Length: 118
Image (cartoon, rainbow, N blue to C red):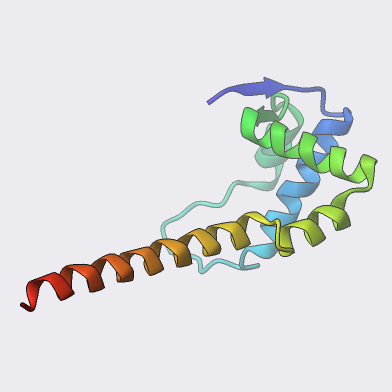
């Protein structure tokens, strides 16, 4: 895993933090509290946030961020969605190949069974 340190005021860091906020908002808002667990106190957690290091970003996260920004800049988001749903899309091609493979198997099976009967 490769990490990259970026300035907290950079465009990359801001978009990464937005993605993290979206993920956290999608998670359940409140987790059940278990007795015996300590919550970070207000002042120490605040100081920890202030003195924390720069946010690290992995190569996969950076690549995903770059791809998303490229799609938005070029205006090809809708075009890609339409293309992937059409006949030339990856999913459609995989389904076609699976159907062909299954049909070929049935033909070969029928030939084997017809040879065994005499």
